Amino acid sequence: MTAEPDAETPVPDTTTPVLELADVALRYRGGADNVVEDVSLTVGAGHSLALVGESGAGKTTLLRLLLGLARPTSGQVRFDGAELSLRDREQMRRFRRSVQCVFQDPYSSLDPRRRVGATVAEPLRSLGIDSRATARPKVAEALERVGLPADAADRYPHEFSGGQRQRIAIARATVCTPRILLADEPVSALDVTTRVKVVDLLAELKQEQGLTLVMVSHDLSVVASLCERTAVLERGRVVEQGDTAQVLGRPAHSYTRRLIDSVPRLPV
Amino acid sequence: MTLLDVRGLTVRTTDGRTLVDDLSFSLARGERLGLIGESGSGKSLTTLAVLGLLPDGMTATGGIELAGTQIVGAPEKRLTAVRGRDAAVVFQEPLTALDPLMRVGRQIAEPLRRRTGLKGAELARAVAFALEQVRLPDPERIARAFPHEISGGQRQRVALAMALACDPKLLIADEPTTALDVSVQAEMLELIDTLVREREMAVLFVSHDLAVVAKVTDRALVLKDGRAVEKGEVRSLVGAPREDYTKALVASARRLESALDLRSTR
Image 1 (tube, rainbow over the protein chains, first blue to last red):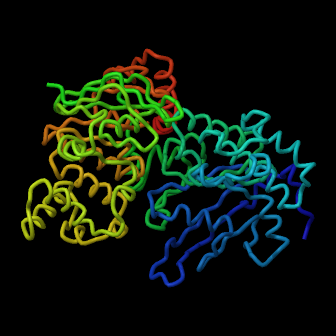
Image 2 (image 1 turned 180 degrees about the vertical axis):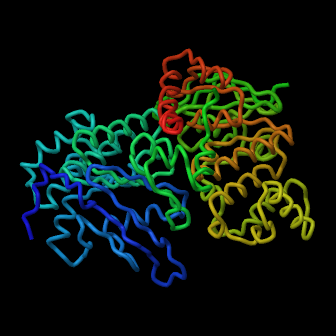
Image 3 (image 1 turned 45 degrees about the vertical axis):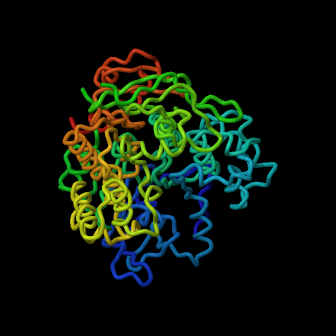
């Protein structure tokens, strides 16, 4: 096994996809049917993929598979070309260092009793990268990057608005300079004006750090602003995938068309 | 004829913070008004105040006259008579509006029975009719189901059926489609529009989403930090906003929406 690339300077590998689902199916124990079925997706380094669909389509299930939080009933989840194996400690260490996530609800995803600084430093500490003292400048930098004031580290989550909390969650997820960010409806809980700002922030991180982004969203305009590729899910199956411009601009599947037509538009 | 007249409504917490500040608007019978604002703008508190449902620790001052009844300071008994008959509400989260331990049919039967005095088979028929009105398929089955056994969109239709059960003059809808999927949202907005038109009901429609408000109402009031920022036709608010805050709101919505357009014209 070759030495792992330094997390500080990710080496973009353009040949093998960083994350891949190959013919994946998942059935919950005791369940009669597969929750997701026949799903094959690839995410190239530095690229972005959106998983869209309605509730129950299996978007979050796919994200859980990609995070290694659930194991497929059949098929493979591959990371850097190798099958993700929860038993392979060396691989899992590399995986945990490379992949971070942001969740939908910034109110429930932050520990209310911990100062923001400690929450943001958590990945650095648990991945064994830094001690409390050496983490401090990185935390300050991460908070600054997401546009939060320097004193944010010493305050508690309840002192922040929803948009600011989502920024804290993004700072926590990006502090250890991961290669891949998985985001589950990262802006759905936010107001429109805040939503635009967080979308801009994610676009900036993608641009500047070459971050690979996999995002689950039901908001097609957010998907169109952020992701190069889109996969449309309906009842656990991918009905259409490809370049976002193609999928959302000239949808081939009737379900995709229905989703696009349902988006309420501003009066002209 | 004025159905709802809100004059100088102010909502304060016991520790002295002002959450709604000197808000005034009125609604004629059959008229529709949107309340637009972001979180913390006081739009939901305003609707709760109209029904006399403000949570403990908050007090309203000013005047709210609903179909001739003064709501502010009214005793609970008078408010109970007003709710359901003069105004009914549909909230964002149908799961919290419905009792998880009671079959859907019974939850609709309760206001119907009180209002009409129907019993037995006649009451069951009225319940099925109420469910049919909101275009729920197989109303008998839905009536027997518990809230968790039906989908989110179906639950919100049940909540709407409950709100409409007593033929209110005013429907208050507080983010009624925010928790729903887009295609379900589109159907729900269409349904609200149709039912309200058929019954010539007035609507107070609360949302953070300009495009959603535009689907149901013609006029809207933009709120920020408990104050009215701008009021007018939805079209002109969107097309030619006058105030900075409205401009920012419209610009944000347009930017997200344009991401969809640019791609599709290519």
